[in-house]
Image (cartoon, rainbow over all chains, first blue to last red):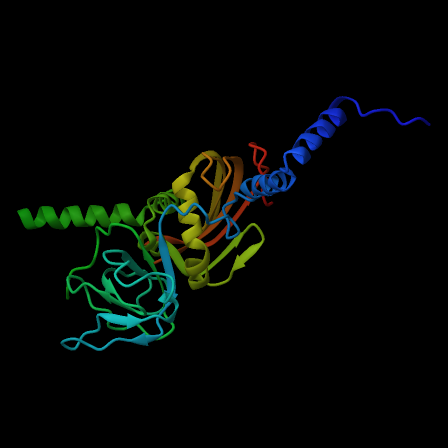
Length: 150
Length: 151
């Protein structure tokens, strides 16, 4: 059986391969293809959806320690996960929603954050009742319904 | 007289709230997801919520709210969910709503365009005067844009 020169698509790929090789672009082509595959990955409504395009900037964490009460009420807590994720002041004015514990579903506004602590604004209700381990989301969202101070 | 009017309006409001259909709860749930209103979403979920999403199970409300709700809100914000078909049933305090949606959305910088059919099963439980979502199960057909999708 004689081996003939590649035809059709085979010929095109062979030519393209030669061009890529000559220009030293083979590795670049591979990287491009890998990026393409990555970009067309799962777009489903689930946890494995790529998070490279977050619509809302968000910090999810747990309460690791309670802050010092002010006037008998709690307005701050510590969260170990904050370190390295957001610098001090980055969460200012963001919306805080507890997603577990006694305050599940309650909304607050962040007044400021340090390296590992979060303080909510005194304009709303205090954090009285939160406990170590409670989970929360802090989102870069305007909050229109922060509860009034009790 | 004014006081009577206020009482009457409050009564009407209460009746209207009590008569919220399970399908309205499901629609409101999607609206809250799209609005990114975390607290509103949580207010519609039963404390015993179980969510199945494409083979992943969240067996607690807290687990869903912490891990997957944020992703679902982001996804809802960047897509449109148009109802294709819907059936509802159940009796008493337990109802179900089965819906298929045509989900479409543009490509992002790192995410592909979306054009797919998503099937949704929602089981609702009456808590007091309102129905709350006790179970959600989402699954989807192939993405018509050609992007890989999970089933």
